[in-house]
Image (cartoon, rainbow, N blue to C red):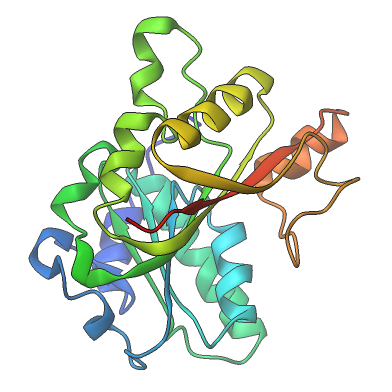
Length: 222
């Protein structure tokens, strides 16, 4: 998603208590950054404007969350959405951290000691052209990187509107040693999550009559 430059985003992010400016410096130490460091740690890759992660985190205070995006403007909007959602719930945002980073280089900021238990990938770029497919967040090249910090039996929750990306991703998961626990070609008619929180893209695609594809993939034990 392209978004216009927002001059306020960088200053607001730097002033936010739940923004991490240099994530490389806390590789292996993410749990220590939270008030309740003993809670399970989940990760969203490509958080966009933050609607999904804000609602998810505020409803699940017993879990800590990290949300990553590459664009300052997008992350600035996510930061504001998180603040609004927590304020409406009268809760301090102590179980969520956001950071700006290139997901293709995620091995530079996360490792085994971080013990990520779940990864969320929602409506990522499908990169339909053949030479670009390795950029997909569900490509085997990326999945191998996630296995460096995703706990054994950890899960990936994936949603997309793109049929080709979904079918390819199921294959990527299998090739990387993940077990497909659940899958659906129409999430809104065949729920596979305990509760489905809609993203901005999901709402838009659903209103256009596009079916949402989804799956839960589990990392097998070594």
